[in-house]
Length: 90
Image 1 (spheres, rainbow, N blue to C red):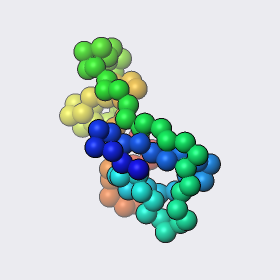
Image 2: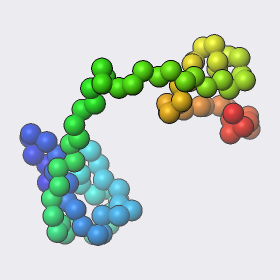
Image 3: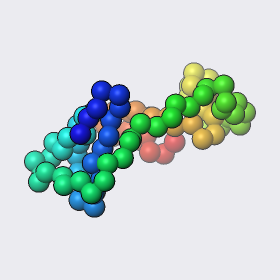
């Protein structure tokens, strides 16, 4: 069930391992979800000024990554590589 002021998601035990679209409707050709409860899934925005400044930098030992893309501890960084290259050894 979607409202104009926010998204309300159907909550039930059967929602686990299901696939939903951006409107909260199942798109995995499974049975319809019979809701026991409805919960608001809109979270509060994070104030960027309230965050702690990243002070501890990680040195990977790979010069291009260290120079071109500084990584702070706790930061999520995707690493892409071509097939067969050792991307999982970083």
